[in-house]
Image 1 (cartoon, helix red, strand yellow):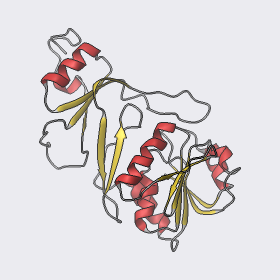
Image 2 (tube, helix red, strand yellow):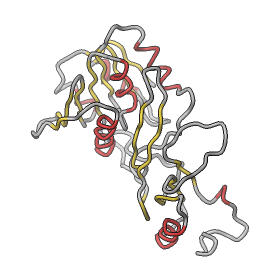
Image 3 (spheres, helix red, strand yellow):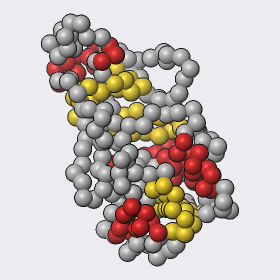
Length: 250
């Protein structure tokens, strides 16, 4: 980046880019990076420099242009979507999420899916575990499923049924990948109805949560709401209350 004139000569690696290691999992020490194990994100990158990095730095598999402070995806139906730009290589990475029900491998195209760094003890998984303990094989609606992490954890926990939903189409596409990757085969609906896909004990939709009640005629034991940081959840909770007995905001 210095050679290409993007960064000043006094710049260091710390302020050059955000490293997104794949597979991503918490470690107590600096990880060893094998070939094609790193996606990097920089708001100052250009295509020429990105292609040079992917070609010359064996550890880097992909380069994204974007600002880590700007959320990727869509916050709600009234908001504009935002994505990063893939300048070179491939930005698919995998996070290893530890849960009481077994480890999950959650794949994400980082240009489209909100970045969350794995933790040894995930606060979201802990909240989910506490909610599930109140029921014996509950039905669960994951209202804002993202890449499917929480809903897949529910399936691993042995719940009766999970309905995945997200208004952001790339999130639903990623959820389908992650269902397959974690041992839950997907069958596409093959119709123009709201149901996108289904499988043993799950269904997948891509709708505004406020409209979801129009096509679901069941009352779920638990409705999970996991929005982006800073998003007002009032409307989400109001909509979820029409669909479930208990709303869990994560």
